[in-house]
Image (cartoon, rainbow over all chains, first blue to last red; front, side, top):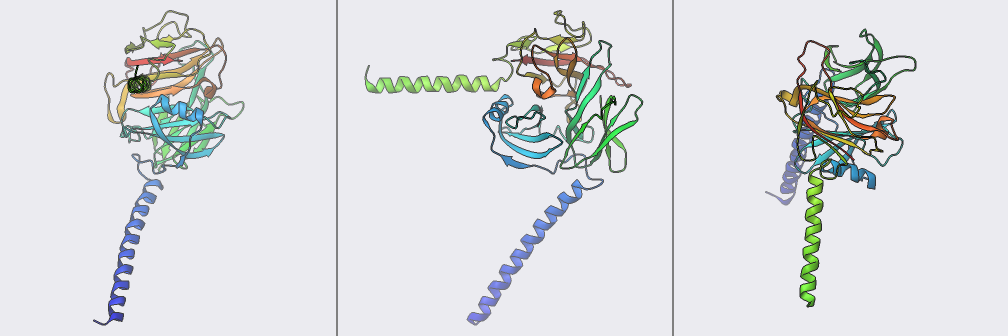
Length: 202
Length: 152
């Protein structure tokens, strides 16, 4: 084999290897895209966010749940949505709804990494409910917010009769809904892409 | 005391500080809590008849702290009476804070650790940290929770 033929063979092999790697990456990305699209599954949160260098108060709040790193999933509707990681492999989720950026906010740490999301718990809801009466069960929504699996298409605020007050489409695996002035919301309901109810609070 | 002994003593002190700090971090909301329920090292049953008898929002089915300017309220809700898929316990609670005007917080029926901060709930000043039994309003049976609560 001449030197030029050997060089051509080497280039062909390199290009083939790159093509195989590229196809594998495309396949992986494609799989994720399917999972996060309409009709996607209720057992996956595709958005892992971007790493954040926490501030001093954020570090303190992370210590409460033994989290060692934090990623910002989304910042919208005056809230920051975080995913916290612990050295034991568990994951926590937090929402900072204050105006001060150096906070992680209200935090939930499911018992095991497989606790959320599941078909029976596709939403990790951190909606704020309050009562101003002492009547049992007389609670209303102050604000709806939380984390949703890929297969959750929308989240709605509903009134006491189940009527729609406001709707937000799931984007980046998070949602936030403020109750419109003059309205009283009593529940938060999540739907899949087919319009089937998949989760409800309370 | 020789320089070597002084050095060893300093190392021992440093190791002790690290050990104490590590054990405190491993028990969030317990060892350093100003209010704990039922105690700072135990879990308790929270059901419709549970009360701390100290003037909570609900006279029964709720445990609450005394009045204070609380920084956070942490709950450790265990797998009780059962953990289904997703650690669903069939036992729901509402946890957060309360004052004379309102009780405010989050619902959960999942076995998990949670932290609530009053300013994140739009509350401040003198408050009570609270956890209350929250019965389902559909056909599901509402079971008692097994949990530990602590506020600082």
